[in-house]
Image 1 (cartoon, each protein chain N blue to C red):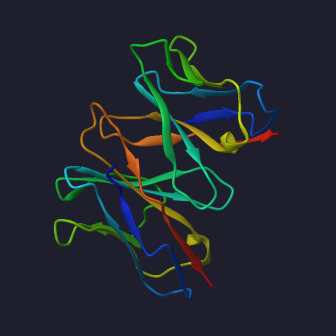
Image 2: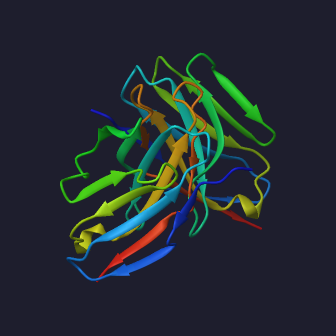
Length: 114
Length: 112
């Protein structure tokens, strides 16, 4: 079964450093999403991306966050200057269309900011 | 606003019993309601979903019911097994762009 692959699985970073989280979507999927889950809390929407641009972003997704699809395959989430409160699991999700949905989530990147 | 409420937050059942988790949503335009199972250290895995034109859907031991008038939907797991132990999340689609809004999660524990 096709998978969404995320790397790294765990990232530890110093506060103020930049991090890039990577996702390889399923090959024929066109809609990409990033979600965040703080430990013990619910999964929260960050951003959706389609046709090489952001479709929607949440209040969490401030100027410190950015997304891009640099090479047509990877889909990345960049946090420019990490804060302690950015510590969370970050999930990439992709779908082929927003009519039949059929989202697939990656296994996540655990980001720890120290 | 965009909101999905999920109850209970924890649920403990004996193996073989049924488990029911309930969710309510706020946007009457929502038309897709998936349920995800999340095991420790893993991403959410879709276990069943339902669309707004259907009132009930069943897949072996798992069923989902939807009441559009009341804006609530429920997950039913029958003949529970220890491997059903996990955190379960409901979600609702909130716009045409496919944004999912998740409930708070239910930690299900099935005791052998």
